[in-house]
Length: 379
Image (cartoon, rainbow, N blue to C red):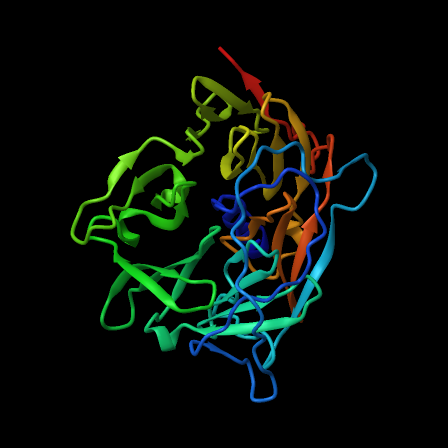
């Protein structure tokens, strides 16, 4: 039952990546980013790699960037394996029945295609290339960041949400980092927008807008970079001149994402779950996450990722293997510059970064459930 509850928690999370999309499928070439004095090796035997600064990706129009497959077939492949221990990530609570297992809690992808994993217990950012090679670690304690609660990547840097509510002094901050790991700027999150008010994460708009996600993204507030200014409410995620507004399902209705005057809806088996926003591209295409929750004695959740093209047609759908998660990860999905969707998958012996396979359609995971599909509803 605990694992099933964890799946529900994981399925109802909101994910957003502000990495720009490119126009075609690309092979990711490992390129490390510039290191600095704040980027430390993971062990005395491991040194950080220093080559060149990652290029900034310029947004361009896209067509479906991933390969669309036909069933039957696997739902993912393992791209990167990160070990546990001194040369990898840390877990807490393993073997303790009175403590929830926790570990890395967010995934981001840089413009050069490398991966950044938020190591919650180690209080570090760990960077790996597509071949599982360690590139560097950024010691957040050295930056006076005490607890990473969320991580977002853009084409110009990283954004870290710090919530140190049980460590004095109590702090709610958003930190902007260069790709090197150096601190660029920090922003205070004012009272009224903390955990007790529903703060659950952050998002970054296509123009660099810093957005506070409240209650899993059901309410959004843009943070003014001027210290002391109160965040103001916004209706949807701002990307490339469009707002992506989420609408939770109500009795007898479907979940929806509203883009301008157009509603994109999905049916849910029991009106439990909903849609969350993952990524938008300059041509109007977007990625969304669908969570279909059924509570018939046993809680079951089907989490899928949908790619909808600029003409409003669902072109591909992928399934997230929730049943294989060792513990729930809040920010488990990210989109690469080439349009592939990767997921952070914790296992008992390691952390996997997996590439999801997209299909034209897939059958519902839950027996008797409705087909995972998003449709345009102009009315």
